[in-house]
Length: 232
Image (cartoon, rainbow, N blue to C red; front, side, top):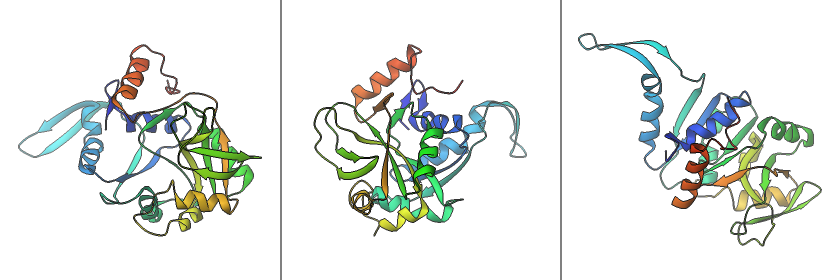
């Protein structure tokens, strides 16, 4: 819910996917998940004009600019690992193939081309590989297969996990329990089984792990040069 340009980063991420025709979202909730529920519950209220009948307890909506999103909010636990969270939303998936990303990074990655790449190779998982400065874990890529997944450290010019995935439902079978981190054993095992492919993205990608990174993204948005703003 940290804001960039007055909008939570989750809004920016969803706008990226919506630009590519994806409007059905599942959000894995943990710490302060109630604030995310409140945000979406009141989304239409804050994006248009309303008449509120206090006596009847009724709200009439007039002009509004809400996106055509369907958002499923799932409480996956405060201490649950990223893999455990994914495992829990399996029952809410509408198809065997789905996209997944985190809530702390923005990119101009072409989601449509990412999905096309995934469909062509027929494996269980596709990871978006990006090449930022060397403070992240690295991917060793051979003929688009992820031959080795190393969480940390990486050297200069290494390809790293950019956080935009396309997955088959069967990839969730690699998650053994609620505490498991998606970035550790599941991705390593998918790599070992030759089921993890890399889509190389050479465009914009930026994390938001620190206040300084938030300020950089804020400045890009304020100056009208936000590369991830692929929608109009």
